[in-house]
Length: 92
Image 1 (cartoon, one colour):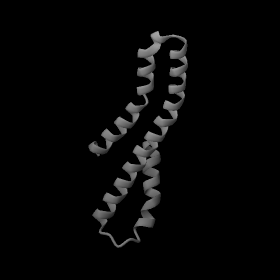
Image 2 (cartoon, helix red, strand yellow):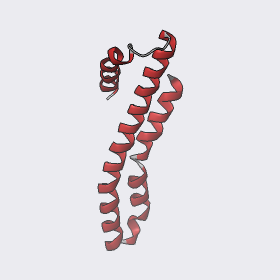
Image 3 (tube, rainbow, N blue to C red):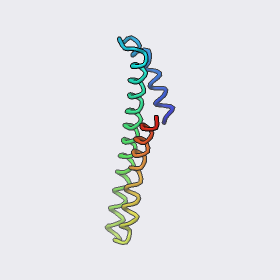
Image 4 (cartoon, one colour):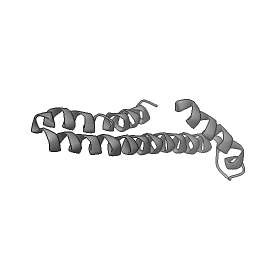
């Protein structure tokens, strides 16, 4: 997925070069756009995954209440993807 973000940002670079910005400021804008795109795609993927997992968790809980711990664990698991994507922003 990170390669997709880099390719997208490189595709935007010629368009943004026509703007009246200093090169350092332009680079910062491209990096910010890439980071925002990466977190957005991660959040979208986590949301899609959580929808299916949440439905399965509710179904399992309807049949047996002993699955509550597993249901919570598997429902929260995709959200760690978004948290890790946000952490990557602060590392870059």
